[in-house]
Length: 192
Image (cartoon, rainbow, N blue to C red; front, side, top):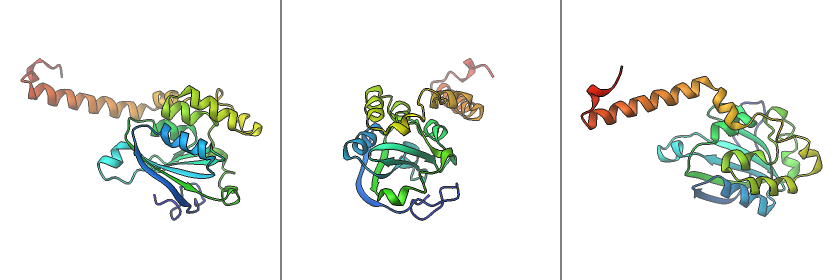
């Protein structure tokens, strides 16, 4: 996904913004803190570890209005909103790029209910940072607080409900265990 050029899969394009920061960070919370402190109106492109280390093209986007997250979209899974946060909640490092845009440019994009996230949810789900989530909620406009962090299914619940993802993790763990057992000469100890 090239932000600013490709559709995000939901019938609209995210306008190309002005790059204001690009870093490799261990925790996506760094990007969330930076966006909040800068009162960024624009978006963050997060490229997780698997894409970053293996030269993949997986990317996710979070949009912001005055530093408060509004939308989330994971182009790899083609899911948005809280589900996208669940897909993105993986160990770091991440490449985090922050782009600035005029608020008027994002108005139509932000009118996409399927991609909306409650203000504090990205801090809780991606950074496991309750203090940052509280700071973000206090910076959010009153109307955004009605989005209700507590009423939405958490990213962890969404992940646990995704049988396909859990099965893939099990298969990967089994393959790694078999490989280690073979390396250590214990392959005859494994149950089939």
